[in-house]
Image 1 (cartoon, rainbow, N blue to C red):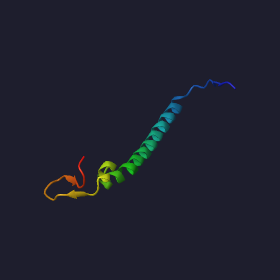
Image 2: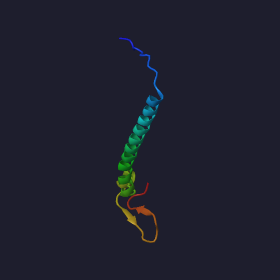
Image 3: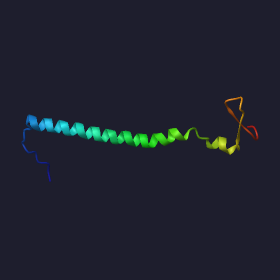
Length: 77
């Protein structure tokens, strides 16, 4: 079945209604996307830094109170 084109000229009121509908739809979906990004990002931000699997395989880390870095205990590579 082919596409049928109906010869309908949109009036200025039709174009205005379509523009308002497009704007409203864009706002709704934009807000939904923003909420989705926040839902994913906020728990990751609040969780803080994580230990990589390579560092976790070396064993527990010692934290020196005078130095702001961690050193691993165990064998050296």
